[in-house]
Length: 458
Image 1: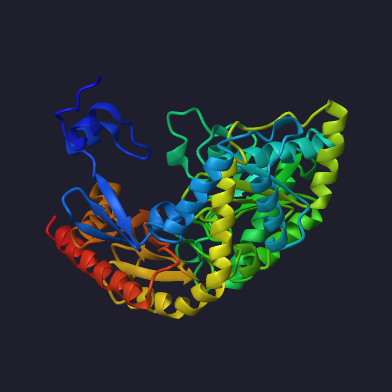
Image 2: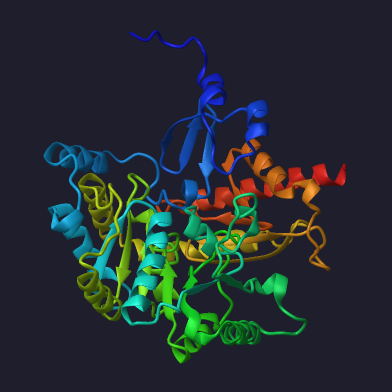
């Protein structure tokens, strides 16, 4: 029998755990923050300190921390059917019920659902479906995928190749060939003097068309887009962007995949980001808030045009030879179904829409701070541009680590913040109250004040 370790969790972590998105050498010097429990929009560490989580963990903890109701559903589901696969025609009630429900609430007509385990898996699988589709139409040369700078679509080798951020590619030998990234849609950073948002959007659409023509429309398979770019700092699109882009895609018969992993299930004030921005995708990927992060699950929704080709190609090949062991897990599917019921009871999109004015007011209230250049947001997702100089919009040198400083000073003020691409990115749990939203604004300002004092002292 193993004896209990005399080491603390802090020490044991450094001795055994590899942390994603972490400087592994520095971690061995500084150590982890041990989170012990959560309640509502707060988490607690092993020192007893409480932190308001302004990012719903990784964009996903929509119902906050702790749900006895969902835990009971998981317990009952596990008692009934601990696991069975969906391979080779096997099925079970939770997977069927969840797939039906997703089709019912889809933002545009969809035909079938492929359940997976994570957003990365969903996007990776959707790429394979896109390639399978074009093979089925006798056009295997249509293989190139276009996405945007500033996007994030997952951590598998294919999904990270979709991702338009070079920091995710370094030392991995990625991205793979055939993944093309068009211009960033950050109007504040990239617009020309005097250019309106509509004009900026038209320029981006024209650049997309030029890219398609350069690569050869006959070689382009699909265009990938998240309605609000999380990795770019919770960045909404400029006005008219998706209307203009979708016209280009239609012109060249290019499939449109909407990555709803972050935006789906109420985040933007609609059930889907596709509804907020008028998207008409052929394929939708979703995850995160699908289960409110309580168990790993994701889904791919495909329209009839896509499924019809995939169905016939699978018959030609003898099977649709793709799948993950835990995809459509009966316990995870049961949890996701219960979460969707809770969203219905809360009228989650309407709730987010009612909180949007308070949220955006808190962002707007930060614009007078010397470190803030601009703010933007929709629903309960948005960001704050961090600048060294308001007039020139210049950014801090990388050596200053302005993002790291802001994050650490936020922690000192009892707030968990995420900084991405020189933007503070907010996506609080959807159960947050107005008072808690105001508290985020107050604590953010305190963190910015502390950071400003530090950089002025350099």
